[in-house]
Length: 294
Image (cartoon, rainbow, N blue to C red):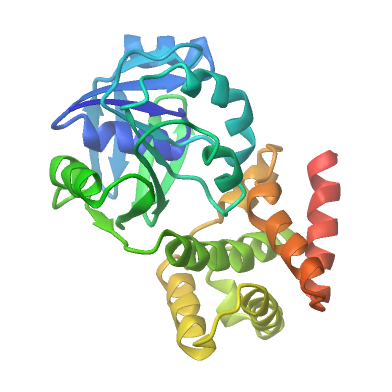
């Protein structure tokens, strides 16, 4: 399968490495300097004590080749500038969007493509430099139909899912995104503000209190009915990623823009619309917005 992956961050590099084992992959980067490095030297994929050198063709994302499948791995706030480029692609090309939160849905629904899928990434990945990525935790890619047919998503899964890099079809894209949004909206802001690893939200009594309060507020906004069951799931995510730093904390440390608009802004707007009292979430939102502007 001819696959284009847009985004040279940790997720883009990770997916390029694994999918290139069985498919012709082109990685589209924002910077020509990164594309040149990858074209000169293979991407280095690190996992525990193992390292692989993976040769990948890289280009800048100003124009895209004809691809059968395009996987969009850029942050939510880069999507707007990418839309004119995607509009120029063949409308039969299958698109998969792997953004955090739900802020991207209003943008991708404007695309005329026949088959649009949305997904969530449960792998742990860390970009060490432009051509080195560390696979810090095995996971799966869950994806679902946003627009298109079940037959098409099953065909995609059959072609790209492997034992070491599995893809799982979910029937309800909103339920899938809602659970991932809850994880991101609780863990990311707290770990960024407190400057802690994920596991400390469970082991430190004060941090755990904030963790519980955040969960209750986000669960009320998202109208989670089985609150206890979902709370246990959230705790499990924290335990499984105990030594990880959240993407928002990494962005803060690197002085990168954080994904506030994709994760927190839709929740705040939904809370205001439904007259919900969410003081902890509002305080975190204001604090992070100030950090984002500095």
